[in-house]
Length: 358
Image 1: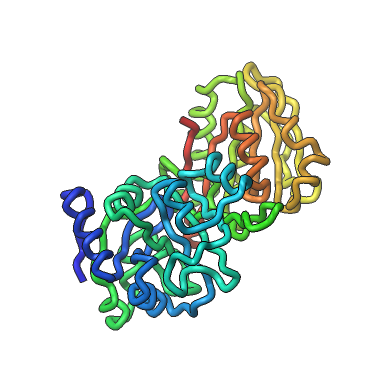
Image 2: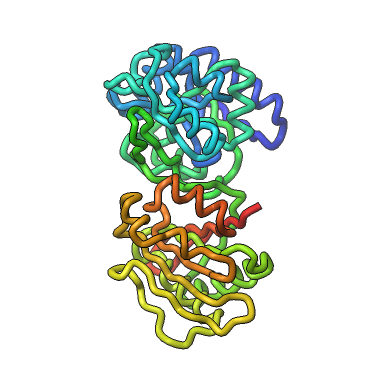
């Protein structure tokens, strides 16, 4: 097993990665989300090697990464719905599942013949696929059922020597931003379904560490001051993702205090959202949404969700993953959307990463 630093000699490392894959071997490679396990998906021995490493039975699909829609059409059947998803979402952190054309080895397509396609927002992968002239597998570098890995140490430390011996090459890009694995979209039928929710956008992210609620409040204050520099001609929306208890509501309350709200800001879990009139030179209303209980487009339409985001408003959205792709895309056009991700590290520590619109 060789480990090569991609920052040292990019073209040489990319060439070595391509040669290793073409030889039917398994490599670990950086993506726009997590480190992935890459093999040639048309090589049966290579796919068997991958499945052996993952401890994964054939029948559970493994997504592949392609360079563009032209390459995708060689492996999946794309109807107009799928083509529109490709145009709107890719390249990006999405896997779109369509009927497979059975041009890959056994173990790549699902039992129902479907196949997930990625066009990542990653020059590393796009350059590698273009160099190969064929796709690569894009499954996360972990054993089946384990959490994805953002650093090589977290990937390698728990591995047995037997598992390490199955890997021919590791391409090191350092510690990756803690983006979630891709959002998986089922485009098999007339109705689009989200099979797995990941980040709706990726980077460039900046990351800060909070070791207390007061530090989370300081981070909120910092991001608020950064946000108001964008002005108020479009709504400003903080999109807050993270597990229960990770700090989203603490962040929202802190934004409220920066806006001059003196009343207690309560979590709107059961009322869906609270609104607070403002006496502020930039903003006239602060909205605090909790989307945890909203799961269908009809529910969003019933509360006229998008109508709230007018110029002069500022909002915090908790559980934005639940709004779905369509509403997310519309909101992104309507507002200045600031993405904030909260990761629970321990009882006192949170990793808070954020991304501002370009």
